[in-house]
Length: 136
Image (cartoon, rainbow, N blue to C red; front, side, top):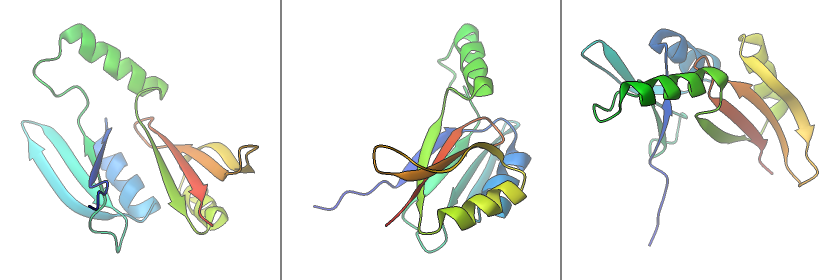
C-alpha cells in the first residue's frame, strides 16, 4: 500500500497576493483557480510533482462557523498563528535568496538547528508560516 499527501490546505486572505507569492516568487504551478460567491480557491503545487498540491482557501468560509469563531480564525491568521507548512529543497540558500529578493517576509535565515536540520522560515502574504528544510 502506498499513501501520499495529495492536498494540504492553507487559508489565504488576499488571492492576488497569494497567487503572486506561490506562483511568481516560490515558482509553483497553478493547478486550479475557482471563484464562488466572491471567494476564491487557488490550488498550486511544485512543478514535476502533479500528485502534491496546496489548496489556498478563503478562511472561515464554512457556513457552520459562528461569527465569533470566524473573527477568532481571522485574528489567528493575522498573527501568523493559524496555518503552517514545511517544504523541502535541495538548495536552501538559493531558494532563500529568491524568496528574499521577491519580497517575502523573512522570519529566519538558513540556520543549522541543534536537532540536525538546516532550515529557514518565511510568512506568506496571509501570514502562514512556511519553514523550508534543506534536503540531503
